[in-house]
Image (cartoon, rainbow, N blue to C red; front, side, top):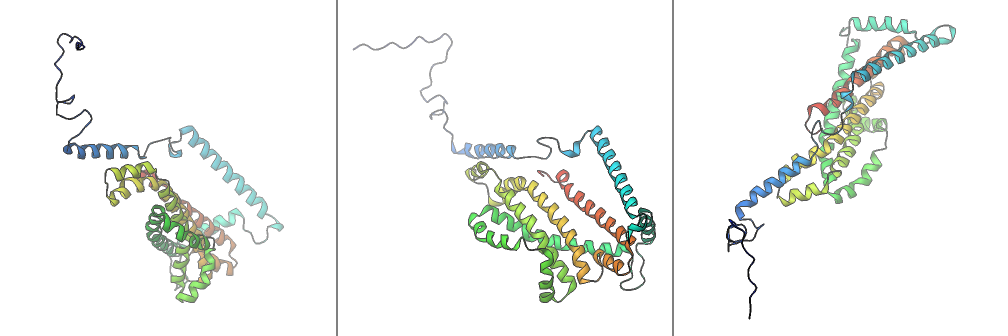
Length: 321
């Protein structure tokens, strides 16, 4: 029987290694047990590299060009000027009624803001004391709502059975107007201050909860599968995968919750009395001091803008946001 001769070996080529191509006695592509941690670490680092980072993606509106900023400032000035002009036209003459003119409102603003921290009694205080009381209620209720909504949102976003079980309850309670909880709060708590906090919590809870749930659900399933492959712990998965992916939507929920809280507390303070911007507006109405009401509306709007900008700044400060 004849045998097929081996092909000629190229000059200088090394002799084949009988132990295999790796020279270790195993086939190419096999790894020893000591290589497993390095492989897992490489896979985990590759996974984290795919997650969104701060500054990645398209430039945000905060990086607008100088031309865009100048145009925005021009639009703001023109719009404000037109509004003041229409306001002055509507309130000048006999048809203006009780509505104050811009000049009367400016005069009232100068008077109110000249001594915003005065005290002449329990309820006769400067406007900034009312503002601080409203801010304290809003921030306290908002923080309590966040402590409830964020962990619950992670749970419902991660566990499908829990989400299916609690979703009907959430959808029943969510559309209820926050002010509808006010009589119930007064009946149960029998205290105006705690009732105001209760109303704030009920108004701030749902936007943050729903946005947290959707943020967790939007996580790429492949990332979670890779995390299970490398046997990452639960806390590491939350910190490195779930939180970075859900954070942008959570910040949206924070903005909505805070703005809703600020909106609701003004109306609640009109009904429960005491100190606060809502009480200040209602008290000025009882005195028919309409210019002071316009000043209070302007202060409420400016504070709402500042709160929204403060939460929006988290996109720049917090990693992954």
